[in-house]
Image (spheres, chains in turn blue, purple):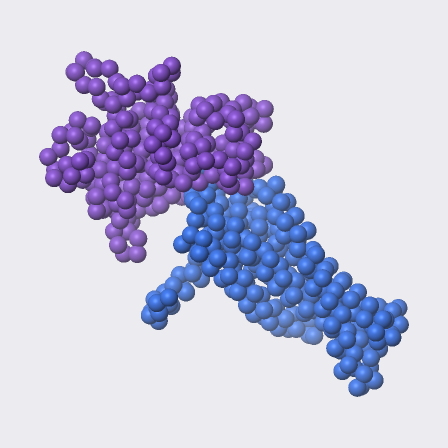
Length: 259
Length: 282
């Protein structure tokens, strides 16, 4: 691949940010006007939400298991192993649940969106859709955006629950803690602000996954090789963006709730 | 599919308009600073067929996409049914496109939908009742002689069959203008003849204004010298009062190196003294 001049690179980057911003703005404004494609929204909810449940359950569960084992090792040194439940629940609800769910859904669905829309783009199906009088933004982007934001919220709750459950299993089966006190400690360790913080993050992550996936797909050029490139870009950009936005949201939430 | 709260294809009123259906004035378009088409001007009248010829990469498909508002020119004016589309918002363009059918070079069928859903796509968008949809889809597929493929997916069809489904999808709403982008491209001669016959059938039965992009001269001249007959299919035109056996509603536009090399009727084209045209036709 030939090297680009710095000027060309900056121009392309600024142009891409501008196009992405326009796509986001159009998708948001299209939410508030007809036509709306409800069947497509429900289909996407099924595909993104229900389809992602197995990986989210597995990821959440095993993360909770590992977290319990690792934190117990450290807490034992301070004689605070009974606080394992509190540490697992706080970590899962505030940070690991939202971020890992975002990253897993990004890997599965941002890639899926980019490849599906990219294939449609290179085979002129997007142009055909426009020629048939349908706005691809409303038909393809808006349903994916609504479905991802809505379903990621609930997927995060599921990941949190299975993470805490996995932690409980490890605490009881391997660390010999009392299951009831683990769950009680987990519950007491959480405050209102933690829940709000943990459930605000998936709203941003869902938005990033859908818009980046669709943007990369709709900008695909160069045949099947281009589809592959778009898919990779969608996963990389959305994953990095989720982690960066996670930092910003965390900082904002600490500013609001104080912890 | 057909659940839009409000139809996306509310129509633009073109009734009563009697001027040229397509009008290009000094249109120029560039990609990456390289001009693809420069200073293109022509008009297409109602019920006329304009065949666009030219070597590969000369901008034929780009011209067709501009006529449908899928691409916007850098300068110049494009009027479709008298409406300026170069500055028209996309939302209004969707409405205008309800009057335009388009057949894409590689068919561009939605591969996740069956033939029935592909052909019925526009009807679903317009929220036509389901009992009418099936009947109209069958009618359109009968027109392209492909009724048996109604439940198949595009991946199960041959190239020629896909092209015929694409034609059925374009004509199902009875558009006032049809744009054919290389309808015979990549097909074998027998299948090409079938497709050209369908294009002629639409021209002679419905008298629809059409722009036909092709790189196959034989297809272009068959269209100019034949007519569709319901019983015999494609038959040579009879001699008219002026002694001509050429369809007077069929004109030619030849593009080369981003400009118009020729614009006129069949007789003018075959008698052109331009050396490049002569070589191109040879």
